[in-house]
Length: 372
Image (tube, rainbow, N blue to C red; front, side, top):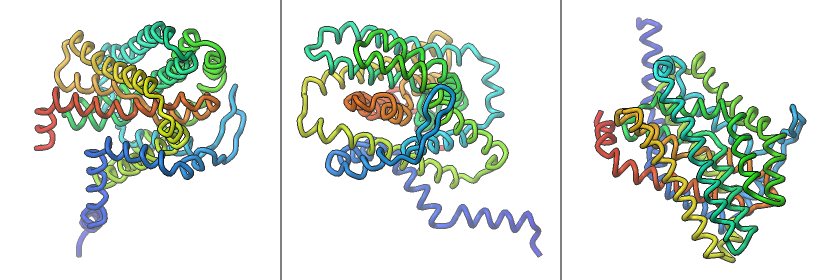
């Protein structure tokens, strides 16, 4: 008669090897390899069929007053919290003991993630003061500020892993920027408030002072910590198929968030295209993203880090949590829908740049990882 452990092992084996679960892993792998094109497709669908996306944004599930801000329960905010919860599930607290031996690397990554974008924002604000349409210039600056104010994207770990980088350092950067976001995000938004003007500036200062900490605490930090605790005490030994399922859910949530927010701006932007605005916006967004990746490269050189650490820093500093940024726009800047465009563009650009960096700088590392 088989023992309980044998029976349990057989059950887990059958669970993991079930054809349906193979299907989940394959779909998750396809989504990762072709995520850029799937994301472009979601933007295309938002342009043609925006009604469902607008409905997702407008459904309100209630609100309450918490601390100094109003907390709204909406479908996008709940999707965001689930995204961050799933990100927390992938974090193993025991791995961070190794990071404590090199706090300077984490601190360098945090400073690079904060100082470089702020310097870029100030420089762009000076250049955009010569732009022929002041309203468009303000929209671009606010969009950039909302990109910069968000923590490092969870998607950076997928690119880091694909490049055979230091996954622990990558997760550490995400966790650190997430936990410190109630401090860093208001700092970025207030700075942007000083380099913008009029209604845009007032909205940024007001949101940075009253609501952003509540938003980040409830929809970003709390679900992330719950995910970490859930991993530690419940899903510590979860099978690989469960991780594939979580990744697949994350891809679906990211696509829905981008589709729903794009539904508000892209139909009008494409039906009445402002070519010069789109071109300058793309140039600025590409420069910002490239600067983030290059900052990660410079920090790795300053600290004489190896190739694996360099990959973690480059993908981390070049990629931001735009899902949180898009939800934040719907709360802070609902009367300025064009602010979403730089964030939507950045979400595409960061994956294109990540793909380019991975193929040029880390291709051999990725091949080594895939062969193991």
